Length: 288
Image 1 (cartoon, rainbow, N blue to C red):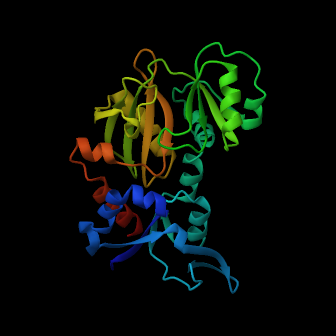
Image 2: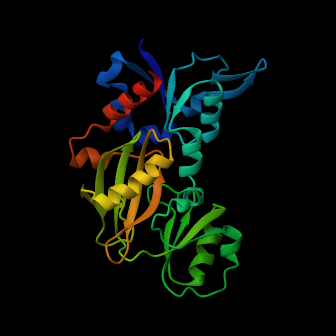
Image 3: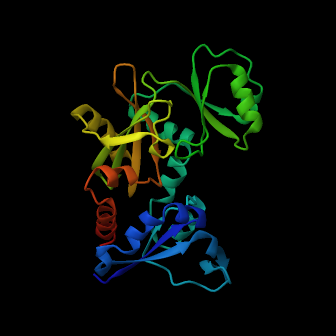
């Protein structure tokens, strides 16, 4: 099979933030199989030209279409366009649309029968008009939030109204606070394979994200936990994702969310797992 051309798409801001990770793709030892080209999302235009779907440079010139795209720009419409042009996208537009919307993720995963915290899907307007008291602490999340941003611990109805009044988001999920806040496990998945798991914890925050000051160490899944992960893996067609679990009061797994554009800094810092190598091997095998 000839060498494949792949685009690695980032927004300018996200590339600057994640340049070290992106460079691992661009400098990968698998270049004899896959040649990766960095493409900045803001330098692309796409739509219809002369009656055909087209992807253009910023000055309107048609671009050489790749064999595949690794889209880390969180742009499901662009993924749809590329797929409609016959280009394989990792992760797919379906994964991007589902996993970058927490409400849609819960809607998709709930029928699998996994333990989850009680969750309401609410709008900004509903929150601004919220009157009933909160009987216990609750966590409010914007459905599009990432990396622990736009996640709030609320104790009173006034907290909900205040957050909604200053937010630009229109949709949220409102959840019961789990029984063991400040700890979670991110499970890294490539294709149908669990490649590693990391326990993240925080001493002073109900959020365990490493980027927010938490700590991280490898975590060994037990058989029950692995079975829960595989229920999700077998339901979706993943490229590479992070699946997050929080803990109930007895230490049992509760499904939390799926990260489409998952960072792997904690995995790289605490293990010898080369997830970029595994991901590119998976992509090559999918296309061959």
